[in-house]
Image (cartoon, rainbow, N blue to C red; front, side):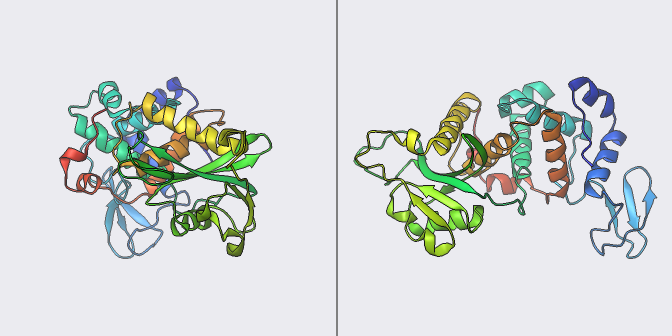
Length: 312
C-alpha cells in the first residue's frame, strides 16, 4: 500500500525523529515483516533501538544496512529532508542548492548524496516501453568543427525512446551511447522496448534490421522533407528539448560525460512521474528504491578522482 505525506506540513509532522524515519524504512524495506539479509529467515529479536538479530543465524543488522544509507554519519531525518526536496521540486535541485537548504558542511557531501539518490531512481526490473514508440538520437555539447553527420569527438551522443499516447507522450527511456552504430542502437531498443511494439525511427542505417528483432519498424525518412524532425518524430524531440532545458536550467550545463547517465536517470524518473497528483508519491518511490539499493560508497561515485565532481 502506498503511504506518503501529501504536503510539507505532513512531512515535517511525520518525520521529525530518527525513530519515525527508521519505522518508515522498515515498512518499505520489509513490507511483509523482517527478512534476514543473510539467510532470509523471518524472525528476529530487537537489540536496542537500531539492531535486529536473526533468530536463525544470529546475524545482526539495522534497517539501513545494505542500503544507500549504509554507514551514514548523518541523521536519517536529514536524509529524508534531502529526498523530500529532491522530489518536491519539479526541476530538482543542484548540489549547491541542496547544501544550502540542508546546511551541510561541504559541497562534496551534497554532491555525493544526490548521486546516490540518482542511482536509486532506476529499478533494474522496470517494465519496458510498449505500443508505438518513437526513437531518435541527439548530441549534448556544442558544434565540432570538421565533423559531420553522426560523428562525435567531444560531444556526447544519447538515444531517446518515447511512447505514443494519442497526441501525448507516455513513458520514456534514454541512454548515452558510444556511437550511432546498429550494435548500440539495437542494444538500446531491445533492452527498453517490448518485442511486438511499433518502433518509429528516421532512415538512419543504424536502425536497419529492427524488424528481424521482433519489432514492427516504421521508417520516417527525413532527407528531402520540408518538415523538421520535430514534426515527424514530435514526442521524442519534445523530450530532447525538455532534457536540454533541464540540464542548462537546473545544472547550468555543468554535467560531466562520466556522470551523465545518472542525470539521464533522474530526468527519466521525474518525467515518467510528471502527472502524479502529489509530489509525495515521488518521495515514496525514492525512499522505497533507496531502501532496496545496495550501498554506493563515495569512492565508487567518483572513481577515485575528486576532480570529477561537477561544481554546480
